[in-house]
Figure 1 (cartoon, rainbow, N blue to C red):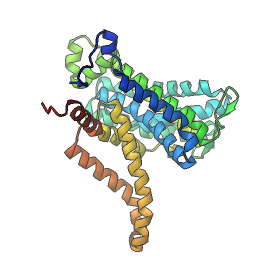
Figure 2: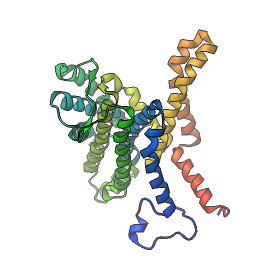
Figure 3: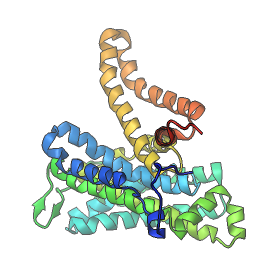
Figure 4: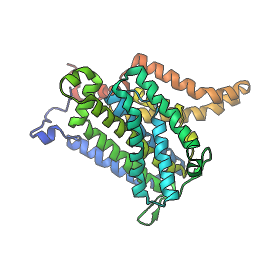
Length: 352
């Protein structure tokens, strides 16, 4: 149930289906956009670089949320589809000199096609077996990148990309890349939020809840599963392209199985089936990662005998412990915690 302050109600259907419903909500939304627009001018370069990396990961995690959280299909190859987008950007921008504004959607499209190919087994496979099918993408795609055409992709070498250029402006700094990455993230959030409220989104959710009942009711389950795989991989490809341009280089080492597992952990911590959960989970896990990187050397100075062990194993240990605690104590994630706090505020002091 969606609670709103007393006296706030809908008079038209358009108000009922609006994403932002109240004047206060619009104030926060516009204020957040203004804050993002001025943030690079009042923040350090390292802080903006961290925000850029978080924004790129949010796009990839939102794509994973679409296939796993909303459609119920486990995907362990999201980083591999990011690699498809990243290397498509390399080929188009370096070898063919294609403009950035065309490279970005083309990278998403190529990753989407790869997602359809690896999503084909979803007609016959479910659960653990589908997870193994998507896990295969995490091994097959990097192998193809390294061995199929090394003269084009560079094989195992790290390949350099030029800075993106839009209308003659070079986005060759963290501050300038911020104005590409953040609008892309905001548009992704907007599109996925609205997609879930459409017929396609309702079909996704029905497949997640009970695919057999959905098929009996006339939903073309296989068709919508492939659509979900395509759209999830499309956003992964866009994220991979942005990652390549942000790093100004691309390598298969940037898109490992561990990254796919981290992305899956982000939607679990944030909350399955929640757009807000994807954002909260990404920010929380990335902040945890940054904290561990800062704490590891401190532990090494205090206990020199375990310095190497602390640096190498602290991150995975903290990540695994965090996952266990969330699965035990808050399986619906940070988004559910936020909803409870919001509802408590709105119905206070009437607890019923």
